[in-house]
Image (cartoon, rainbow, N blue to C red; front, side, top):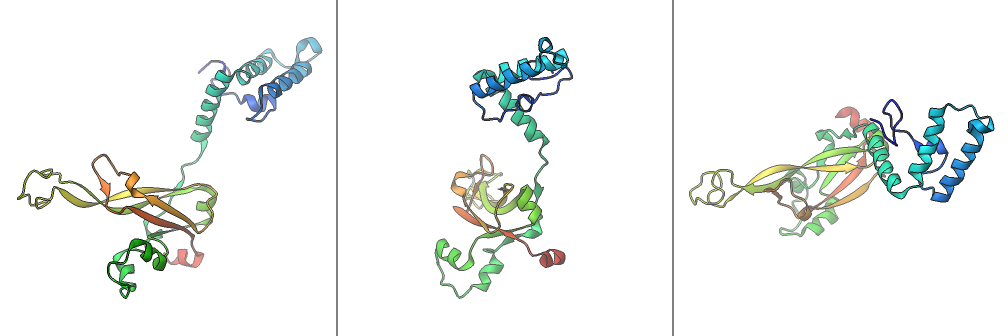
Length: 227
């Protein structure tokens, strides 16, 4: 690929590094940096840079001093950096604890029936706990949480009263995955409240719960050895 942003081998040139300016540098700062480099390296002033390198400095000034070109260049630079980033680690299923599951609910069977979700959270702390390592917190990770959902009956779509799949209700209960992103630098014991009313697993499926609370917990290494 050739053009104002690439060298002869098709590599995207880092004009910020070439001109020695930060990404937030204004037009005047770019101009001053360009002038200093030209004074230092221009052949008429005894500079020893090859013409290709000198041409890159000139092109870099043109790109970074033009708002439209700079915007397009920044987008390409960002896309390149994102492609270089490693894929975030995926948290294993065994490190995703469903604290509001039936098993956990049985531990709190003395809680009054019909208790509201906010009161359950007061006693349980969260719906789901994701156990992560130091590397997960430092480099970022993702987890796939299984949640109950519902979708139109794939057999009758609610049009048959005697449907043996949905029993005439028109919808069936199923399980869908929610991807939970843990950005790099996330602090331990971070609480994430997810509004499931704004999220759909797909066009036809909805989550049954209105929302969930997730706690990101740094796991104990002894616990990790026993997993």
